[in-house]
Length: 208
Image (cartoon, rainbow, N blue to C red; front, side, top):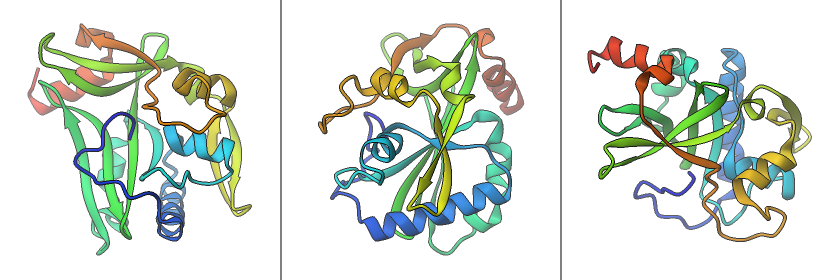
């Protein structure tokens, strides 16, 4: 998770556990035709190391916010005996940031990306002083134009087609292993009218 560990203590990646969780999640998302892609540190690892980053602690995936309702209905995950987690909302009012889960002992974060004007946007926090949600804002092409990465030469997963540009936006000198938060462009949500998906969601929840 970029810039936030949610109280999760990192001891590095157990590669066998990560492999099992990743294959399980990908199989389910593919089965239900839920669009997703390698995001943040997972995308970085796949491009630079052709695997997960051993010093990382979670698997990062992205999905359109429109996938939320379908994700909540998948009993193969939500009722799995080895599953712990759920939707992680932030701010006032609460807006979904990601679906965070632990499966087979491995943390997996599935980030929700919203349509925001001509960009792609994720809620990444809340500024109490400004009373506004903090955003990560990226070029929409990173979440609409993909290439295929073959994990272990067996599991196909999407990654941003312009991987170098995406990783440079997120991490600057991404080819050099270093600590970093992976944020992209930062902004604030000043008007819910700018994000119709969020406005509809809040109206349905009775929060707007």
